[in-house]
Image (cartoon, rainbow, N blue to C red; front, side, top):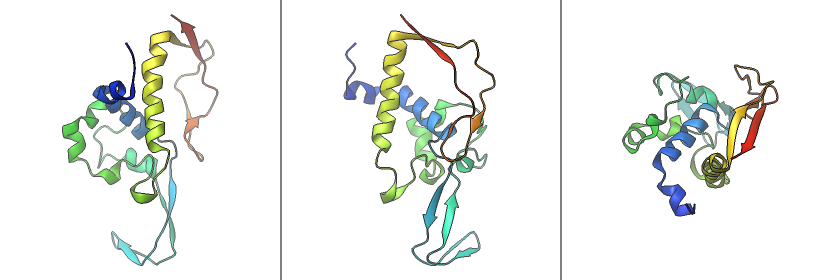
Length: 154
């Protein structure tokens, strides 16, 4: 099968899976925002110039927005379910005009990897892989220890 941009764009379940991966494992766990005017959020006043933190991972794991938030569930991202969701509850790359400029490239790279790697390799956990995999959330999202995976060409 010849894999093109169009082919990958048509793989709806793949899109649902990568979106759910970004919900559970966002590239960064928080981002800072600058108030450009005085605002009140849920009764809290913030003055122009105030810097506050947007807790991306906390939003993505909030049971108010996601039922069973710790579970991997690509069905959250069907067209129907996505249309019911407030877009500000899914912000792995930020939101609005100043979101991550590399967002679309990163999403496409994830999809290309998920299409090509299983076609050419069998993946198995390495002998020294420690379960459960611990996550380090200082700065960017990454594993706390080396991740040992064996790639065997098929």
